[in-house]
Image (cartoon, rainbow, N blue to C red; front, side, top):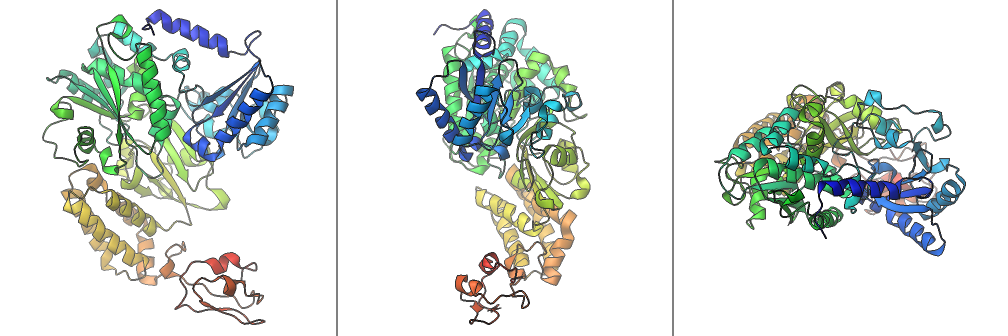
Length: 638
């Protein structure tokens, strides 16, 4: 295929817009099925297959059926968007094959919105708007009749930059990315700007690395640009392994070319011709979409030699990791690419001077690179106008846990936890109380209710005893045992430790032993001080970021929830009813109907019962499985 020039970008844009806009002679309706990993897991493949079979059996010449990545509201997948000529898009949720056919017949066929499955009306209001939240159009009377639960609050308070194309384009069609302005920033950079201009704009923007470290991208790029040695390398870290985090995966699945373009801009600014995307093998869909995007970019000459007819050449290659959490650390990641064991090394030199194969290297994560084309297109000052004094722009979070609206969000830096959890997330389900939010992945901290009005940025989170991390945000309600939560994250870090540092390897094991003892009712008050001493030793003596931040879950929970530790130790109680050794099942005599269901279903023969007698649970034999309580129809087991 012939390499594109700048004029070709405009021709492609006109062609795509003509093919997809709903006007006379260009089609009457468009149906988009959202096919991110979350949608596919929920059954979006069945929805798409059902519609394809219908289109194969019956002619729908004026209807365009297409796909896109995740729309963001993962809790409502499978999702589908319907656009009719002259009308705002309508977004449908929680679908199956039958409901998709009903929507095709009623909405597309007769123009009647199927309110049972409708989330809201209007593309800007649903999928977000790059304007500040206060300027986004509020819901109108058009949404009357739509169920109150499925409102647009989740989308209305977001500011999309890295996620600007989510749910809007087919990620496997490069033309659709081009039609949204894709590769304009790269063409602008190569024809109107010098390499140092790229670094200047990124510096002015205040963009900090979104992978967790929060280091200035402009300073890093500037250092690499000045470094001697060739070749220079650009690495995109897509080795996302935090529990509950899927920001990078979703960006690649929805908009892979934004990452490729961002890497190419970094290459131009830093003097590099080679890029690697290090992505975990557990991301098969993201890897497949990324591979397709790279191939398409090469076919168009947007990767390879003499891009846009200039002297600049740049190409991107994929390196799959085996899923080791520690390979998210920069030196371990580089070692893995080089074919060495994925273990951290002492950093005697900055990677921008001696990184991959001892050559100057820039390493940023997926979200960082996805921001760059917008920064170059709109300017560093534009990006710096959002956020806080030291944390500019926006941040993508995966919002999960005990919260109504789970999904992927993007908000301005400085947005409060309360706004994220209650206005965007919809609050805590089932009328339960908020207890804590854990930010920053397994090495992050747990923040209590009195931190809900804290603005979220790099420095505020660190000051509060947590970290930004890559953007995982796990919300917990009153049913969470904070001691058990801390133990879970320490167990995760212990399992994922490479074992190189005694402090990380053995220190985390010792910490698990103490937490196990507390959760089993055998804790001692001196365990609190011992935990604090271990935390300090592990933090001070570990080599990489996994070890130096490993203690955060324990330190933050001791800071804000020490009473819960002491309740476990002194009172031998777990009020959340999570730590099984600290509670027992008993039969409420007045409620027992003498049916024997608990006796018949107990796997440990711990229930004594005779016909017409009240059941009794033998505590010495009870394994705390809870089956007796589950099967009892009369709330007789407490």
